[in-house]
Length: 143
Image (tube, rainbow, N blue to C red; front, side, top):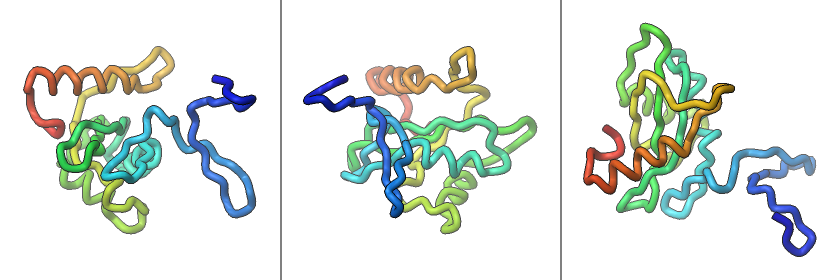
């Protein structure tokens, strides 16, 4: 973690115009779509604003055209009904500020997401499911 007297935490930060830093995500979770960086927490933040979304996790899945594609795993609120198109339209709306490459290409609805005891979503479990699906020649990432 320490190289040439620098501490490498794996966090990605941005500096604002006043010189203040904000942590935006973890480097290992960053999605690269056609060479553009997509931070999962940025997309998740938009999805959490949707009135029907209870829980969400965004990660990158392999894509033959762009290298990686953004995929959203969505748990709806009790009694909520939505279509993938509705979720994608929400993300595309100009007021949410997601550029085209940041909008999920795939949406998968689930009853629950794998979590730690304190409620943090286990991304690695979802990534492993995607790897198994791909190696088995299973369904497309958006199914």
